[in-house]
Image (cartoon, rainbow, N blue to C red; front, side):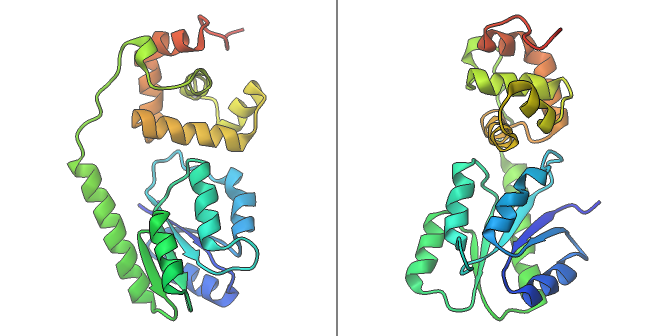
Length: 220
């Protein structure tokens, strides 16, 4: 299994395939030919393995452009580092991308080693930030957990071993909404993997149930 994941969104099919061939040597790679194609497939993504992920995003594409996709992802609480790629972006475009949180901007044409160097810097920096971070402070008082009742329901079901699609069906809401709640739980409670999530549920099950307002609403 690769240690890092790269998601490519690029409408130039030749460039997309070249990037996939080059990067697949070192990274787990998924590729999409448009923003709409990526959004349509996002429910198939399972980022629960905690694998560090970066997006290579074409700035100018037919339909939704790169910055517009970036904003949609932010509204869904999906904020993976984004490296934009463009052949003729204007300065104002670059500024917009930076303001929305882009971490780098590559001008086409670029070489395989250039993109590899860019990704290596990004993932090395992310790893160092993680190593330098203070350990998360565990919250043990039930109603002080900084999560909503709906997030508590999602947390409890995931902690019981249900897959995200199963949780969506059990709660009667969309899978994309479950993924948004999962990302929110990750950000609020620093639960990056399913192992961490399950352990947290074991330690704080009563607190989580108090937020929901029921003893255990999912037991038959």
